[in-house]
Length: 325
Image 1 (cartoon, rainbow, N blue to C red):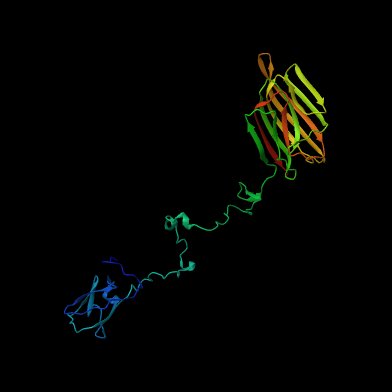
Image 2: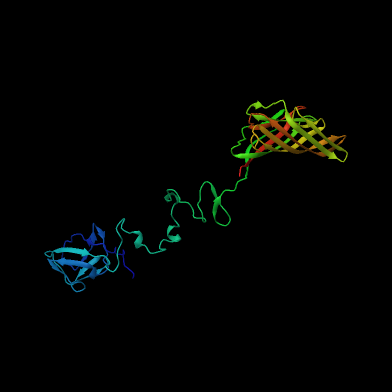
């Protein structure tokens, strides 16, 4: 229904201010000086000269006034006017009185919380229910919506170095961890500051270069055209290139550290590379492959590439670990 003036507060009982009577039928209804608009005469308990008045017969309510059926005098006393709320509704619940059970299912909709400030959302958000299984630090969510143990064998980036500053040695150390990784992949690319590269591979233990007297079976095989095919077996060093006409190198190493293949003290390295070899005024691509075994009680934690011919002008090296299954 439509109300004239303020909508009455349901269930709210108001004892109105005292009224000084005079020779009239109409008096203002106030509580604390503020106008009150009863819903109807039936929502008011009026006592005049100690006698309860009959609604709609003895008085009526018009907006924020009470109109008596006959004129009063200054000798009359309005003992009280008590205004009732809308008794057909429950009214406004008191603070902290509505329980979860009193709310209808789906009563709180998106529209009701659309204006909620993000600052109101506090506390720890519970783990999302994305699938079956248990979400934890050791599981991942697969495409079939199940949590399973994270797959092993991942190639994990461990260390890298890149620079254009001239140097004769490029080293990466501290990335080998035999308890976590079974092997390593190392990628190296460099350009010589001169016209040649004589590259030597070495294992390292931190700042110490592992210069054992024997790098066993340091085999090299080169091929760059149909007539140039050579190999060697050098046991006192680990040459990768020994060629004054090569000025670029791209090398992929597969490294098995001590204990990585079941033999304590044995470290192995296999490499495959390509470069550009000068031949007169032309440059031809060449493939070089090789392998070494290094037998030593020291467990290496990195590798280095040394250029005995000239400095490296530009270079980068990236190391990845192959996790144990």
